[in-house]
Length: 150
Image (cartoon, rainbow, N blue to C red; front, side, top):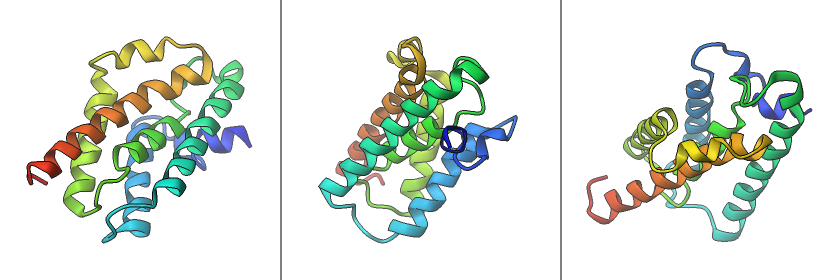
């Protein structure tokens, strides 16, 4: 079960671009379930975020002895990061596209202490860099909304 969670139903087995594929899958799920609505209610959104992050940390811890540190197969971190990127953002094609691009830029280049998060042990390190990338993305999207640029 941990492998299923870590790979997000097998997406992680895509050798090249698995992280991007997982982020795109998250975007598609968000679009299909929340398009046109402003946001989720606070409590359910926070509970879902917490469960996604904790399950990713646990799954990352469990698969690390078999697959090594931060294996390409583990893509639950990209899903959590993308989810956090779009948390409380009104969903539209443009906001989802901007969120995806910003999140992947932060995730790939790892500026502003994101790289340091990778050095945390086990599943925590796997998840925290993407969680922080998602937080940065969300903050930028919120600013774009405030200034009516999105």
